[in-house]
Image (cartoon, rainbow, N blue to C red):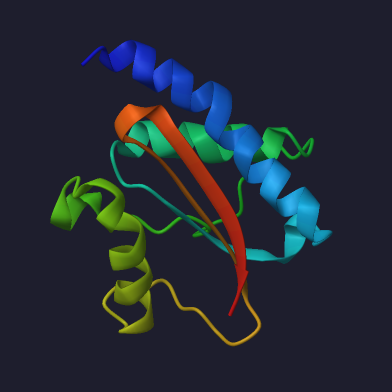
Amino acid sequence: MLGRKIYEYSLSHVPSAMKVALDKTGIPIDQVKKILIHQANEKMDEAIVQRFYKLFKIREVPDKIMPMSIHDLGNSSVATVPTLYDMILKGILPDHQINKGDILIFSSVGAGMNINAFVYKV
């Protein structure tokens, strides 16, 4: 794989897909409680979330908005997203919780360079 090209592609397209999904809901960005993103590369994921917030003219990414599981589980392809959600619900990631009414953004980029993003209200 061409790692640098994939990194650049992801940074160019995933934040805008996330923004389109959120914009379609009419929910303000400050109501987003968690961003659950495909855990392929921590540096890339952090850059994606930073670029997402910059699209809203926000420089500082909220603390603990993006939980990470890659340190423990590695890259398990798109399964990282539902696995991460399950880990939070089960209390396996102690610094993160999801409550009824929370707004979450799920996003991934994977095989074939397909990009997915959706907004979910718990």
